Length: 148
Image (cartoon, rainbow, N blue to C red; front, side):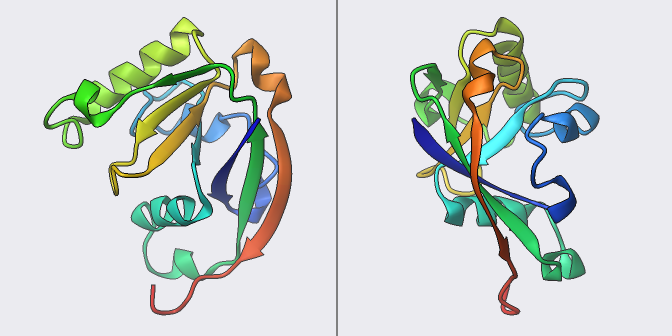
């Protein structure tokens, strides 16, 4: 088992269904496809959140969610495999992520963070048969330092 991290509004802290990504496309999915975005550490989860929000939204108290996920069903893409320009080519990453989800080949997909490709985001497939073993270990309220 491994631990992964994500930030969420308190209203959605217990929702790990991937419903939000079903409604809104992301870096690794098209709209209409469920995926759960997590990070390898809490600092990257915070950085990813900050990259996708602005201003006053950052001042709300949020929940840092620690998940326990099985680590025996993993696929990984490296920056080398993604090729040059992958950060700018959101269509490419959406196609890769959506194809992975639809294949059901693994529960987890490790991908480099666009923000800092020395770090890994861990995508979780909520319709994979092993998803039943994904558990929320902890939720913790966090507030943001005003300097951010």
